[in-house]
Each structure stands twice: as C-alpha cells, then as structure tokens.
Amino acid sequence: MNKKVVIVGGEGNGGVIVSCIEDNKRRFGNHEWEVAGFINDYEKEVAGYPVIGGLGTIPDLLLNTDYYFFWAIHLVGRNVLTEQLFRKANIPKDRLATIIHQSAFVAANAIIEPGVFIMANCYVGPMAQIGVCSMIMANSMIGHNIKMGPLCHCSVGSIMTGYSELGLCADLAVGSTLLAYVKVGNFATAGAASLVTKDIPDYEIHVGIPAKFLKRVRED
Ligand SMILES: CC(C)(COP(=O)(O)OP(=O)(O)OC[C@H]1O[C@@H](n2cnc3c(N)ncnc32)[C@H](O)[C@@H]1OP(=O)(O)O)[C@@H](O)C(=O)NCCC(=O)NCCS
Image (cartoon, rainbow, N blue to C red; front, top):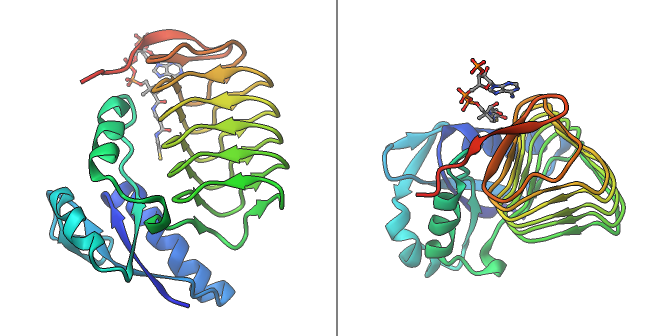
C-alpha cells in the first residue's frame, strides 16, 4: 500500500509516529504508511527524515495528491495556539493519515475519526468516539462509551474510565486517570499522575489525587 505521510511537527510526537510506522513494518509486515518527510518551521531534519517545508507550505503540498498529513503539533499548556495553527493549515479530512500500531486493541464499533494516532499496547473500548487528530500514546486505556474531542492528547499510560469525556484539544498527562462520567474541558489539562474525580473546566490545569486547580493554560 505505502501511502505517503507528511508529519506536521517535531521530534517529540513526530518521532513517536515514525517509530510506530517503522515498527508496524518491521514486526508486523504492515506497509500502509511511508514517511515522506516533516513540516517544521525550525529544523532541516526530524527523526532522520527531511523537513520538506514549513507550515506555510501546506497549501502547496496539498496539491500533491499522493500526500497525506499527520498533525503532530500539540503544545501542552498552550493548546489555544495548537488549535489556531491546525485551523489555519486547513487540511481536508480525507487527506489526514490515521495511524494505529498493530498491537493496539480497538473495538470494532469504536468511532475513530481521520488523523487519529493510537500507539502500542493501547485499549480502545466499545462505542468510544475519538475526535479528529487526537493522539493516544502507548499503554493508554480508553474506556467504553467515552467521547474525545478533536486534537486531544492522551499521554503514555493515561486512563479514561467508561463514559468520561475530553473536550476540544484537551490533555491527559502521563499516567493520569479520569473517572467515569467526568469531563476535562476544552483546552484543559489533567496533570501528570492525577486522579480526576470532578469535571475540569475549560482552560484549567488540575493536578494531584484528587485533582485540584493548579493554574489556567496560556490563552495566547
Ligand atoms: C500540568 C503540568 C504541566 C504542570 O507542571 P508545571 O507547569 O511545571 O507546574 P508548576 O511548575 O507551575 O508547579 C506548581 C506546583 O504544582 C506542583 N505540581 C506540578 N505538577 C504536578 C502534578 N502533576 N501533580 C502534583 N503536583 C504538581 C509542583 O510541584 C509545584 O508545587 P510547589 O509550588 O509546591 O513547588 C505537569 O504536571 C504535567 O502534567 N506535565 C505534562 C506531562 C506530560 O504528560 N507530558 C507529555 C509527555 S509525552
């Protein structure tokens, strides 16, 4: 198959996407994706692949219909900007690459929107809804009937209990847990290793067990 994917972003998330694509090839014989290069305003090379343009070149690159795009920019604590950049890039849904590690379990009736990434050893339960360009990092447990908005980021080992919710461009930091029926609001963050027992309002960062207000995210 070997569809060409251009990764928009840097070493952090972008390097993880590359390692997933390479592992899917090497250990599972899955050749769905081939990395064509990176979009990055600052570097010449990322994760061993060439930078083929900056954010401003996306409209031109979209003219090459061989290219699919993976959105890997996610600025923890500054996601209002992440969402602005994403909207400006204006990548059509049918040009977004959905990349799933072959070791992940994804329930057959889960809804996975275009541009989603699911890394190794993740579980995505029945009736889960994962929004456009959300990233679910390794060993995360995404329970049944959850709702995840677009552009969310579930860091390594995070847990969403059944019926919990993430808003637009929200974060579950490394090792954090969201109890059933609670919601992390738009642009909000559950900090590292926190246990979220009550809703986190939009634009707020909560940490600890149980999670309490720490500060607001940057809104510029
Ligand atoms: C939410 C988060 C960004 C806050 O970190 P921060 O901005 O460095 O926090 P601050 O420096 O403002 O810390 C203020 C206080 O909160 C405490 N604190 C910060 N994060 C905490 C956490 N997750 N749990 C408990 N306390 C925490 C600090 O120790 C500090 O306490 P003090 O004032 O008594 O010294 C951080 O906890 C986090 O989750 N980072 C993201 C990790 C992650 O998943 N990255 C992606 C990897 S792929």
